[in-house]
Length: 217
Image (cartoon, rainbow, N blue to C red; front, top):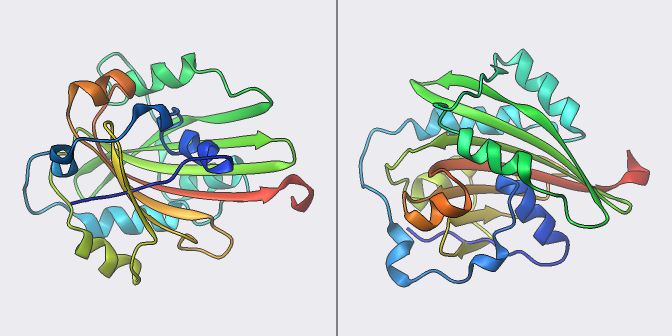
């Protein structure tokens, strides 16, 4: 399975908004990393996709995402040392926003969907007159492989981009699933030493982002 994403200019900020860590400098992946992970079956991809689509429907602000998620049963996550996303949260907390930008986050949220423990990370990035809102739903440590054909069936159209680096692979739809959304992505972070070094976690995730001029808010 091969997934892809492009990051330059404002897209580099979208990369920050995906896992909220800059990965553009990670370089290209070796060919063998394309399908890293343990093959399996039975992952409830339909339920997780629907949760991502509905929870991330309104990206007008981080507050809008938070309010929508709260109504859908997401709760604030207790991040202890044993939490699956604790290493990622620690990296986010230590991260400085790029010069000239303001990154406004929301405490992580948690929900059980079809037996899977999912985490929701919300961010709002402001760069000059541009606002980028990111909504990402993560399933840490999940290693089952999701075939691209399953994702195409759920989204209803072929992907626009595929990207792979030494940390993660991604498949992207531009524009995203909802009117005004810049993109929608499926991320696959294999359980490798490189991924743990950069992100602290492995697993699967969906990301929705929207970019708009602040003057339109």
